[in-house]
Length: 345
Image 1: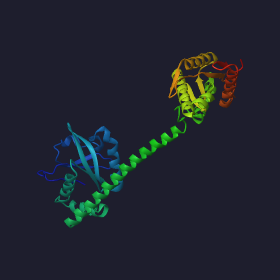
Image 2: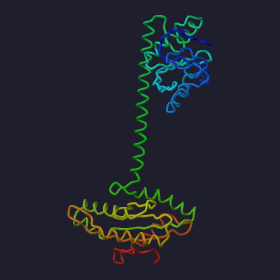
Image 3: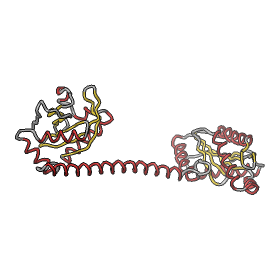
Image 4: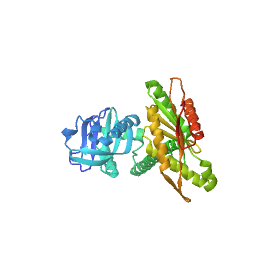
């Protein structure tokens, strides 16, 4: 079907007849001063900016599906100009009529002008809009009333869709935060026991698969009960925070550090044999003993004891590795505290 407006028509906007694929086959009206030869044969999505390209494809899909669409906005690139255009579309037989103007009112006027075309296709256009869209009525007041009702409904739907999209994004963010908090210790912001085991199991499997060394350290704050008994639990929490911060600064980004429970911490050292683990453990012990932790009762000196175990054999589980490190920690405690012991030595 071929439609054409009068050459002297002053309506601002574009009326483009496209095939089912969105390729422009006729410029029905050009009130934007574009060059017709540049538009013919060009897919409609190529008239929009790259940021609106996917949206233009969705517009065509919905137009083919619903036969009529309204209240879409695109950034159109016409010649050297960039125009924010309001668009509507109507399926006419096997073709797609796309209307674009810089204001919604101009799109409405452009549609009215299309209806006033003096040829045999006018009645056909009226019939289509009446039966499929219920957009036009023979009485002007009913045309206006129905259009306004449709516009309000579309605007409400767009608003609800935007609000739903925002709420979905916020819900995803909150879900991610809940999942993160489920794995993080509230006091120290290290992995909690659950988080440490979840990450640790993956690290053990990686060590098995690639036959890489893996070491574990269990460490405990010496005489922690005395801090709690002498200064209270709030000061005890400050001591735990201070040790966590001090040790975090000494570890590598690849290391996995968690609060195992109470005043006890656990560390996994990927791709680290015993010699490297011993160096890291000694650095943790020394640095902690050199720092003082600021509390409302003044500066407090703290020491830690550490036990090391090395991953051995393809059948060893994370729980076994940590148990061996814990046995070495117990030995360090029994040997006088503020020292490093290795499992099996």
